[in-house]
Length: 231
Image (cartoon, rainbow, N blue to C red):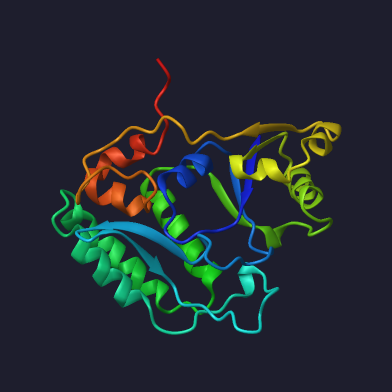
């Protein structure tokens, strides 16, 4: 059984879903510290004016050590984000087909008060639309023992996994030897080899929300979130 344990992000890019879809279980790792100007509450879309950020306003003043699952949303935001998406992608080939569904997600998201719940809503809905069969669970389901790598190991063992798939950025702090001593194989995700696809608004950009892929390619999105095999 392969598991990934990563923090939630807002309308993540395709690589996030490739990582999830490569595992049997994804654990939302939101009982860890929120980081400002990270992907937790924002992501990028392509517009006629270039790549732009969509950012959920959250309460951070005086809450320097808050965990992601404690972060509260500061003010209404969802309608503004939906209008930005509509303006950016209304001429995309599959916008008309998918916009009622995505708009409904935003209407539901607007009623949420915690960032983690917004992120989980979009992650589950997008994963389902892409046909991913991965089980999604919150880290609150599992013991919270240890710190950093030890905590990840505790969750992995409690989930009954024997393989741990990590994003490449974790190499800076991840203690692979700790997992090896517990008989768990560590595997590293690569984000190289994604195919380009028809995209609005100028030159191609990989590092945008998966909604860009969905509105531009429709049913092909499920294939295009996967890296292409090397020649």
